[in-house]
Image 1 (tube, rainbow, N blue to C red):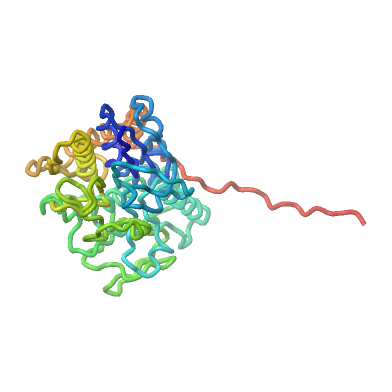
Image 2 (image 1 turned 90 degrees about the vertical axis):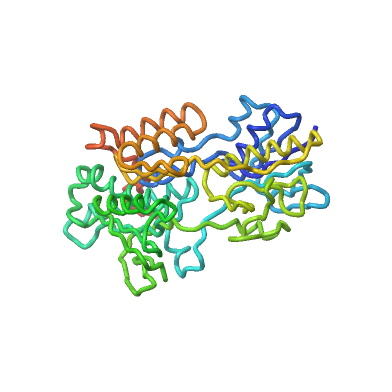
Amino acid sequence: MPHVVVVGGGFAGLATVKELAKAPVRITLVDRRVYNTFQPLLYQVATGGLNPGDVTYFLRGIRLRQKNVRVVHEHLVGIDHDNRRIRLLNDELVDYDYLVLANGVTVNFFGTPGAKENSFPMYSRSQAMKIRDTLFVRLEKAAATPGTDEGLRVVVVGGGATGVEVAGALAELRTAGLRPAYPEIHGDAFEVKLVQRGGEVLKAFHPSLRQYAADELQRRGVGLHLGAGVAEVLPDAVVLTDGTRIRSDLTVWSTGVSPHEEVDDWGLPRGEGGRVVVGADLQVEGLPGEFAVGDIAVSPADLPQLAQPAIQGGKQVAHNILALVEGRPTTALHYFDKGTMAVIGRRAAIAEVVGRVRLTRGVAWLAWLFVHIMGLIGPRNRLTTLAGLVTRYGFPFHRRPIPIVGDVPTMRPPKRKTTTGP
């Protein structure tokens, strides 16, 4: 049977694999991680709202219902287009009849001095856990030295959906979860600030929704620094392009993505942002039978780098592969925009549904909750995530939420020196 190799187990890759469940093909799914990550909820892990396992799914679990797929835990390092073969990090060669590149993107620091060394991106589970651990280490340090200048000052770089959601979740954590737990930290010792190069947050939304989000953030005590980008990130501060220096104990970088560096060696046509150029049917330009889909690809429609375009694109790739197997022509992706949404905190969210219906406040929050719960893979993840979010935001639990603590180092006495005999 024809061999389909899918690289990447994210939204696009899994959508392709699942859509080919009954097709007369054999599938090899290659991913450098053993799990799929539901990235829209990573900020909840970073701020102690959810456990890492709530937003991840064991990739080999798809074998329970789909027997025509083999999962390989490896990393793609090279593509031989002429011989239709890929090379993995362990030097294994895998032949393919059809290739699907859905390996996503990574954080882009835009060459900002100090950003890579002194800020925390949040594009993977391990990065979200690192933010959470650093957050609680710093809180314990501040609690151990009350009355001093030791506090926690967090700067979130980026005013898109991720940046707004991170800032809102931190403000919620500070107001409801940490005041009773850390009585030693008083007043403004825990600050949350958001930096955005543009003059508004959430520029992809309608102006009225942007204003609502900005007002809600400020009402929750998030300081907004708009209209200036980041010139440099220092270990203890963020310097803006207008000269402003903002003290920062923890800088979260949530703006910009780009393809992984190894994509440069794969002999693929590149377009805007370094993404792989594909046609309307998502085949890579000049490479029949090879597809790119999701965040790594740029199509004539220039779809946004979001979950829904990735999922719909993955399904379309599967349909086109089946068409090629059966000798039929491929068809273009006709994207249906179901809408976008972002949450600021409890009972505060914005949503644009099917491009025209605009929602705010509790109604938008409930819509956000439903979409994200249903987007998770597996009943266990849906149940535990629902429980975690209800415990964090639901009445009356929100008055005393217990955050999921980070890995704060254990306190141990110094080792005793051993003495030896004469």
